[in-house]
Amino acid sequence: MRICSKEGCQYPVFGTDKNTRKGYCKSHQYLRTDLGKTKNKKEAKREYGFTRQKDMFLSVWLRSSDNKGRHFCWLTGIQIDKYIDTMFESWMFAHILPKGRYPKYKLNPDNIRLLHPKVHTLVDNFTEDMRDEEHDLGSRKTHIDFDKWFELQDKLKKEYARDNN
Image (cartoon, rainbow, N blue to C red; front, side, top):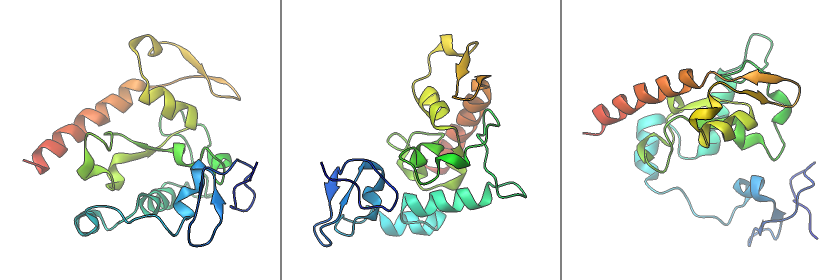
């Protein structure tokens, strides 16, 4: 089995760059040089200054650190820096409004919050019975303020409707 070409990554190859012949795991496909560009590139760049999700994520990461350069889950306060350069890296960036249903906010940095990767999964798969549970996030069991998430989601839905009508 081939291993991802990203330095330090030990995950199996998902796809191979046709230009460089390097193989990358699912998390590192963005390093490929043979993939097509984003659709509506000019529109996305004009509105938010980004043409790629990866660039927008980096901007969010840089503006979200505390005065010591640390990063924390927006809903739990748990430090998440240990997930950088792992297969969970992209799971730290959560779209408040799903990019499939709200494509014009895909590259909007205001539509992103840093979350613990497990919290991101819980938000994406939310059911009402999760609201009062404590969730195991590795180092401790934690209550997640889902109301905070859904209040922001409602606010952004109103902004999206206003901006796109």
